[in-house]
Length: 258
Ligand SMILES: [Zn+2]
Ligand SMILES: [Zn+2]
Image (tube, rainbow, N blue to C red):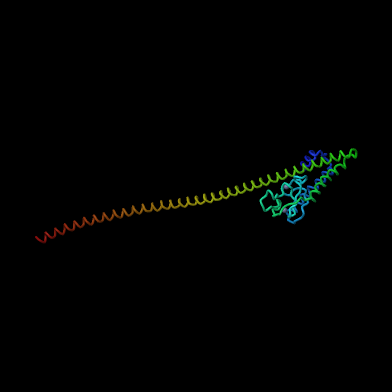
């Protein structure tokens, strides 16, 4: 803020050190604008005393931006005030959004703003030499007006910075969301990988179990084959014995017949 103040002082042609009374008065105006803004958001329905439009932030000095009072109690600049001939009904207060029948010039606030800018000019002349007082007063008044215009510009820049801060914060929030989504995806992939590894080890166990079973089966086959071979051999032996016995029988039958 010191830089801004120096910038304002430089452009208003004021000394860089020792605040002039015009500067002090304007600083008071800024402070009162801030405190009034907080009472707006508090919703206390207080009569706004800010010299700045609560909708666009412009200093409501001069006819094009003269303060207009809405029935909700908010004074906005003429540029922001709803115009019945342009807007679609219902008309709304640009600050609080309440439906309003219309606006009327806020003569009291306009007078206060005019008086303030006049007072700023008058008090700034107090520090100048008493000689040629009228010319000094005119110069002081012009300086005070430039000062107030600069304040207007600065408050506009502040609003721009606020909105770029907001958009940056929104971007950060969006990126944080993306980061969380990526982290969630990573966790999901890790879970899938663990499940796949588990499945692989299960299949490997099944494979080795099958190999073992097959080896047992081969042993059984070999054993059964040897059993078959032994039985065949026994059958052949029995067949040979049978032939031998039948030959003996035939021999005995021939002997009996003789
Ligand atoms: Zn406005
Ligand atoms: Zn309002």
